Length: 311
Length: 223
Image 1 (tube, each protein chain N blue to C red):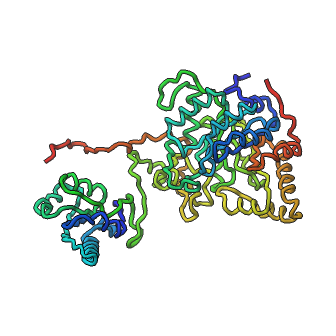
Image 2 (image 1 turned 180 degrees about the vertical axis):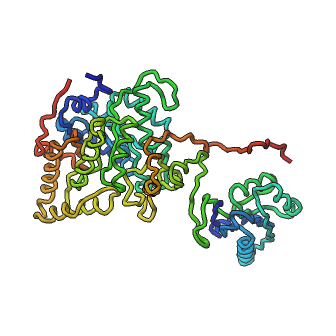
């Protein structure tokens, strides 16, 4: 068997052929370590790794690497997220080395939401390199033991490299080519945008299968349970790149107001059941945004427990 | 052309408040074409300043002079015999012109009357749009003639990002997604192969002051 690239739990679970189940945790808007620990407690034992967002929606939060370290202390495996908006290539590489030195083994490479959305719209967006180039850079550091400049580094950061994919954005025809580009850049796993339009997702994964892409990288299907009709409508109308079909909104509107959240979870679990059987899907990335306390219940209902232990 | 925009009148007036004799200098090239700092705009601003200072009972002796190009030594020379009569200079040229003026008359305080905004094109009378960031290594041949550095809000070389929104940029529905346009154009030209491979990181060469010496020329002794 081929040697593990990073040896993270997530990599081992996927390599062993288990259906992966990962979670998400947004660091606090302050120096509150307790909040991170509190959220982590709901995820512990229920997921294989936890994606720690990096100043998501361009709002300043505790650093992803710092919250990742808190998770390691709590016995969870973090997936350290890095966006291209806030750092140049020097800062990125030094943070990557530091993160690895402290035990981080997964990393997610993203462009980052534009700073205009956040709490510092006056900020200069860095974007020295883009997400595709970031993937290439981490791979070069890991596999060639070289900095982006080509200079040698003394110990390689053995990271399991992730990236995002949006199966829904236009032009749809380009989506699989973009995935192929990320795979060529060196990505090991993909977290998709939250999926609500199952027809479109099935088509995207079919095309990815046809191009052989799902054999080259593990695809984790993104699932975010809808808490309310308002949330669904917001996602549909206000979040760029999100595709929420009217039928999904109608389904939530069709149940008693007190049971909308329950219905949202039910829909998410149905999706997860389908993903388990879907060729080309290696797992689910559950983004229960500010709903971490619901993760144990969702994991139970989605029948993904207990999580596998792979040595 | 270089596009500029006049600063708010109060800001200009405030910069000049301690001076009694000021020369307002226009530029007849880019800023004249974009209606920010040519002869006509010099006339208007000069009259406004004159009027405002009179009303404040603090009269300003203000002269006006528009040179063909403030970024060209040959044209600046025309000012040599005039500048001595004034305490300070107000320039309506782009940032390059203003600096070249200040360099020629280092003993004189120089003030900018415009904000230099971008390298752009003329969409209609008085309507200009940015098209170039002068990054120093042009990729337009690969991107169907659409600049990803200027037209993509994140300046991505391997777009579009996940925020592309039905042809629009995530920052604003009225802002087209550069990479959507690049895809569409290359697709119609049958040249999508150009963007199938990952473009490596940019060699940013616009981080220090740049000099260009065209082939066959050399740096002359400064006159």
